[in-house]
Every structure is written in C-alpha cells, then in structure tokens.
Length: 432
Image 1 (cartoon, rainbow, N blue to C red):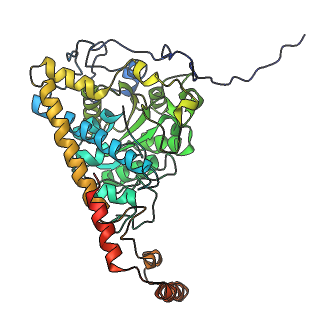
Image 2 (tube, rainbow, N blue to C red; image 1 turned 90 degrees about the vertical axis):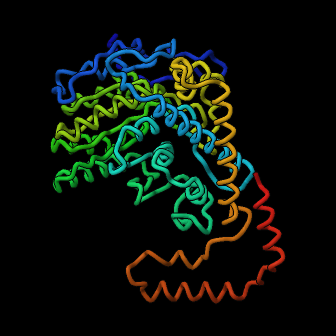
Image 3 (cartoon, one colour; image 1 turned 60 degrees about the vertical axis):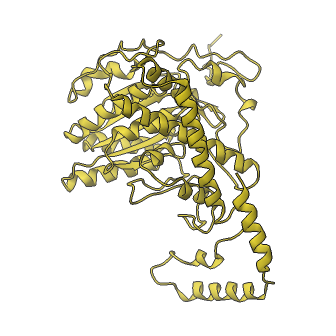
C-alpha cells in the first residue's frame, strides 16, 4: 500500500483538567552560558539561540559571566517598578470587572521583560512596545493617571477616545504608539533605527512582540531590513507560551527556538530566562552596546509565561490547566528578585510588605484622580465634536457640516442638572 503523508497539528502538552507539563521547555543551569564579546561575529555565537541565559539560580544567588553586577539600590528600583506594574494591572482589571472601563490586558508574570529591559536602555532610545509591556511606561516615569485616563477614554485621554484601552503613546518619553495590528512595530522600529544611523545619532530602537506575532509577515520584513542594513535595533520576541488560546507550537516553537530565527538572517539570536531580572537586563545591555558600536541588530527571545488571561475578554481555563502558572518552572520574576535581595541582606519580608502598601496607596490615589475625569459609567465625558478634529490639516466642508449638525442635535437634548453632576463627581471621588 502506498504510504500517505500526514499533516502535523501542534498540540499543547496539557489541556484543562490535565497536569501542567513544561517538559518541552529547555532550561540551562544558571551561569552555564558564557557571555561573548560585544562585537563577536553572529556565526560564532549561534549557540546562544539554543541555550538559555540565566543569572539567578534556585538559591537566589547571581552567578556566571552574564551577571551585570547591579548595585542593590538599582535592584530595589527594579523590584519597585515590577511591583508597581503588577498592582496597577490588578487595579485596572478590577475596575473593568466593575464596568468602569471596557477592556484591559495584564502583564502578570512578564514584568521583568519590560522593566529590566527598560532600565538597561537609555532614556533617549526609542521604544516600540506591544500591548503587554506597560512596564516600559513605568520605568520612564509616565504618570499612572495618564495611563488610566487612556484606558477610561475620558476627558483626559491622550488618544481623545479614538483608541481602544492600553494603546498608550508618549512622545516626550520616546515611546511609540501601540498598535493592535500585530507585529507592525517591528518594521517601524527598524525604520526608525535606520534613520537614526543615517543621521549619525547614538540612539537605538527596541521593539517587543509576542511569539505568535512572529508568524506575521512584518516580522520577516523587519529582520531582513535590520540584518541587511545593520540597523541599531533590538528585536524582542516575548515567548509567553500562549497567543490568546493558541499554543506557541503553532508559531513554530516546536521546531526551533524563536531566537534561532536570528541566525538565519545573519544576526545574533539570544534566548534568555524572561523571569530573571538580572538576565534580561544583561542581555539587553549587551545588545544595546553592540547596536551603538555599529554591530547591528540582535533578536532576543524572552522565555516567560502569561500568568493572567490574554485580556479581560479571554477565559484561559477553557484551554489550559488552571494551576499552570504555579507550575511554571522559571517562577515569578517579582518573587525571584525579592529573594535575591534578601539573600544579599538588602531586603526583607517586612520591607517588601511596607513597599506593597505604599504602592497600593499610590495606585488608589491615581485611580481616584483618573476617575474624576470620567469613567465608562460616570461623567464628565468627551466632547463628541472632537471626532472631527485631527483628521485633516484643514477641516473640509463636509466634516464641518457634519460637526455643526451634531452640535445642533446635542443642543436639543435635555441638559443634565448640575446637582446630579455634583453627586456623580462626589461618588467617583469616593471610589477606592
């Protein structure tokens, strides 16, 4: 009988009701991977794409040549930023569940990916984030009130109600607009980096996408241009194991590591423990130094786990074991950095508890202020006429006519009493 070919369908190792299984994740011992010279030829360091750069061992001690030897104060700042990001996420999800906003996406378990990388880069470097790297805004000091207002689409929304929640931007902070169209930020980052090199600047670009987005054409277009023109850019693939409900194997993760795709384009690919703050910092620092010395791009795969749902519209219990996050072998990035600081004698459980209370109070205060500018259920609200602005340099007659019709219609609506507005404002201010 003539043999027939069979189509292979990737299948996750565990489904709801199964015991979590991460045997497919190849993990190198902490300190086992050597740090190469910054300008080492890509062909000589291809092994970095198959191994895993790790600094923090199971004993919470930093080992190996990748250890960036950060001062305890810097580690405490990193811990503070990661904890603040998580508390911010938790608050925003609760507010969405209360109907105060329409949508949210948490980064629980992935905080080190953005915080450590953001701290390793210069403030002048241009960042092209994904929708799960809100930690980049935290590192650069963006007001939580501004981020909350964007999610609320209220009267202080930086996007004026024209974007879905979490699609932040911050020009003065050198953080590009987030796009819901997957992987568009990769070619944008490469183009920006090429322009910076043409102008002779020492600034570099960095961008982040999920492993599922690496199956998009923009990923390959970006790597081609970055490699050919040696653009000063860092291209980060955050392999958190799940693209919504789709296991990472559907993007090719069963075949090779995502970092190994860099080798095919002639650029270094580095696979790093994405829950190890020190390892992420060190690998980003290495790639940044290489880019600034005209060494070209680096592709970094951050091996991590998306602890929360993809978004508030997702129910992960329908496609993976409920306890899978607790079984993730690389642990929790916040817990690991906390334990490292305690092992150094530079932290304690008491200090950590005090920090958590301080940051919780800060997030609460920020929410109260943001809510005073309006929520999904309480005023004040954006002026609908703003939808006609910023479309053309000069408003054409047909848009002006539509705007006037809207304003005339709104004047016919019964005005809301000032007493009611005051009661709603007071109710918003009392929310915690």
